[in-house]
Length: 492
View 1 (spheres, rainbow, N blue to C red):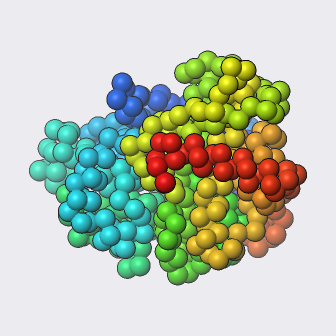
View 2: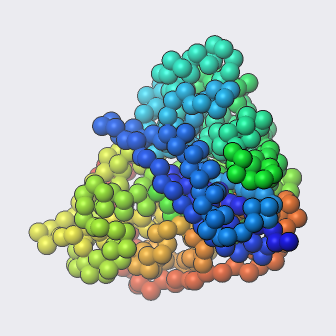
């Protein structure tokens, strides 16, 4: 009898179900989008109920698409959009919409804590700079502004956390209230050295530590689910990681110094830092990469708010393109004499700048700047932002950055990947399979269930490689222009 592993990747734009066979090969995929709820203030929310319904539906869709026997599914792993925050009751009913990671509405709270001198304590304990990007401030905002959340707190039935916690709770019918170490480390409420919720930090944000979920190994058992009765028997949820951490694991970055960049709505550049935390002096954060096989692995990371979302902006908001597929040809058609730069600070800038007040800018235009040049500037800004992180990592590790592994939809753009290699000045490997987040947690689940030999799978890395072609002097000049554009909105 064949055996399959499900990987569920609940991301910012939608939900994917991935089906892997006994060899770890992707057999089928099904996707569903969900609404992006954005108001005039730039607040970004999702409907948790819609997301949960989509999870149930995509599982049914992928099984039917693959044409397999439901009884052949051995287990499931879940990866999730990180930092997106949800408060819900004992029945799993949300008290408020999920506040998405991009949302910076809680910046005032962070400013107040910084004025009180709490920033250094938060950074030391959690490895993360004080920022509205992370769940601590988002959850605190919900607890202050939502009357339903306040009722739940008074009743002692408050549940709160990231998307993984909400999905595990719903999928297990409320039997398991858990998160994994990777997601816990991104909440800004978790002591990354003591590996426990930090009560003092929780108190700073007025979040009751006793209401937070149990922290479980990333390849641990998170309960069982039959997906609302769709399966004939419950199967174990045996792997959970934040999407970027799942991609790090799926890319086979299991040795210290290996790194990857996930190109999604935003981007995460993450390096395996080994079994001891590496503190950054250049604007990066320290988190837990994952905890597998009973061993804690740390990571150094830089997060970018808008990368793939810049392409969505080109299509949906300014209507310069009809689809993302058009961008490569337009970028190649752009005038080489044009030096336009787009800095996509639509909701501030993430690492290494951490400026939540910054606003976007399109600069360096001339009378001949047209659609092609603006589209190229939008693609280029993705590579520039990734390079910002790579240079910071190089500083923190004394030049240890040698190559980059990449995944995500935008990596299918050959112009972008070549430009990334040119500007970063290093080989850029593009994974043959783009769904590395869901693959990583599926691998973790399959390994835990004795289905996968990870040494063999990781030794067989499949992908293509881009190597620098641009003259180093030209690359340096172009990158200097980018830095000058950033200084226009951030200062030095």
